[in-house]
Length: 500
Length: 118
Image 1 (tube, rainbow over the protein chains, first blue to last red):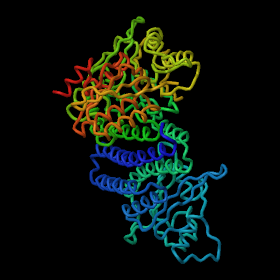
Image 2 (image 1 turned 90 degrees about the vertical axis):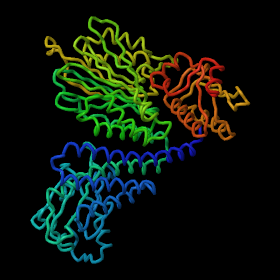
Image 3 (image 1 turned 45 degrees about the vertical axis):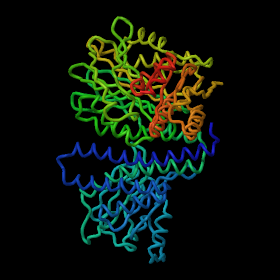
């Protein structure tokens, strides 16, 4: 083992490298997905695409220099002002002070007014004093325009600011306000802050829906970037490996799908319990087209925040590349190329990507070094393993990786299809014995007929029975699916998701 | 306590091939020892390594990452890495990951020596 300070230094080094990669990847990936989906509105989105690409580039430059929160926010604010052709802007972040949650402007640029009523006789002439005033405001959720956007989680376009009752009169006296846009910075449903811009640089013009679209795209990227940098800021203060891992674990949870997918005629269940020590598992569902659902399960070799960031990259890359593609091996080849270019030599990911054909009742999948796909035939027969050729992602490029192959499994005659990570069979009891493949198969054989979600419950209960509840070193992740049988529809449980 | 041991023995000193014997657990906790040991060898000019895995009872993903890193560093220095006699359990892990396609796997030292001569 390395001494802790050295370990931390090493961690930091890897982390900065990965943040750069992650930010780039996340931004590009979301962007690519957007481009494919919105080809109709080429012109508007071409502008958004350019802006977001440029944003990515700036963030890349920033991260290689320094990754502190203030610098990041300054760059983001200036960039947003520039791209939306606004004359001023600010970023408000959520803060918590003794249980009181409020928003505070962390960065202000240009002639930006305080948005709370200013005491009388307070003459703010110099821009600096104006900024100090804006930064000193504590805005409650629901208060004024900023608080409203934070509370509703929806962007707000104010074409004519003079007609907006939620902007105090004094604000107009300090800065002639013509028009304004506000956008929440959020990841999934979690609010990070609010971005606001005022007044177009071209006088007399109002912000439009098109400007809002651009701001929304930029806010999307900004939220992820700010969140990652915030995590790092906290780390450098606490400098404790345990809290790093805890943060990574929370981040990992955040990356799991919020809900189970709609898949008519199928029952799908999934479970993931991140372990403190190793981390790195994830699963996801991607709508490929009207008839196909993509199902992903993966295990990233890195632990802690580097692992979580790689997971974030891979997840974005898949979500961007999977729609419209029906050959899993082809998708994994594309993902591998991107992972290979952007990760260190000793980092790799095992992944199975399966495409469920809702009409044909088949599962086509490719396996990049991941555990086999298992099907449980009817009548409690022994589970069947499918292990097509495939090398883990990030290890080799091009031709060597191309051995990966697709395999199609017919689901008509099976009780259940199961995807899992090695944390399941490597679960350990206090004597250091592994749960093992045999015991795993035993449970599958006897309990598969119970259904997708019931099988997971039974399996977890048996694993806990084996480990006697001692903390596990590795994540345990399971995805199960089966065709609903018409005679059984009534007893089949509703789609379910659990996280540990 | 899960142990990990790493030791050198020359296989073919004329050709500069070093056999490194691993035993115990190669995982996130022991990977730093492994990296340090192999870095020292590289620093001393070794670029051909045979990893004897007979005594290795377990390898985690961190361990696999370390093997991959070592393989690439050796190749960068004009050498290569050969894996010798992994146990059934370790072989299964390597095979599942597709490593058996990337690495030279040998069942005897003679075979390992031949890899470097070819």
